[in-house]
Image (cartoon, rainbow, N blue to C red):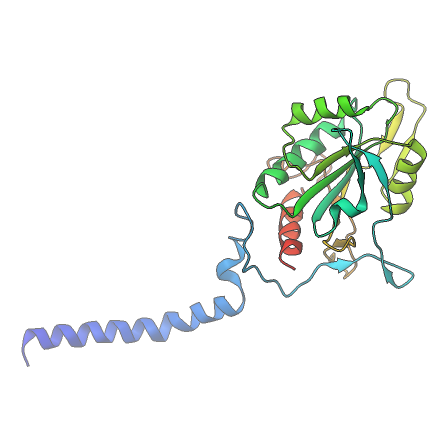
Length: 247
């Protein structure tokens, strides 16, 4: 047997050994979805995205909770209702433009999310002002420009105060209220709600199998956690937006 034959036998043996050791591991990783999991939060939408763990519906009296009807005026002076978000996945927040504390952080995080899905026309944001008497459309427009809000489906809305507070506290169970504080005068949650294309409130399950309901909106991905040890949930929200876009 010449040297060339020995070389071919050696190469064949190495290929066989690779197949025996590594191919089962690769197959197993594909089955467990580990190969693509880390790529799912890349910019844009992966239309082949699949996840067996569908997001939960928030149920009230055994029925999935849907966004109630609303009608407010946005930063461009247009009337916006829940129907403008049909067929879209969107994030909901309650804020006010003169808020000196959590609102700037919340909206920087939302702009971050906006930029991840900037090429997807089915993603939007609904921001409701809790000081509508101060936040006229032109004020909201200036605020949008200041923070780099460019998504055409991101509406910053103003309107009847009673209706906005009802929408927050009853419609989304996101706390909004007035406080005896001359400097601020208002208190509200820093949480975001996530809405699917059919107008239902959705979220992932926690460690006990219950819907998380909301996503922490104050802590950024860069901060990772706050001073109390609460971990950021912006990455989680991006993942879940993507999941709903692919439903």
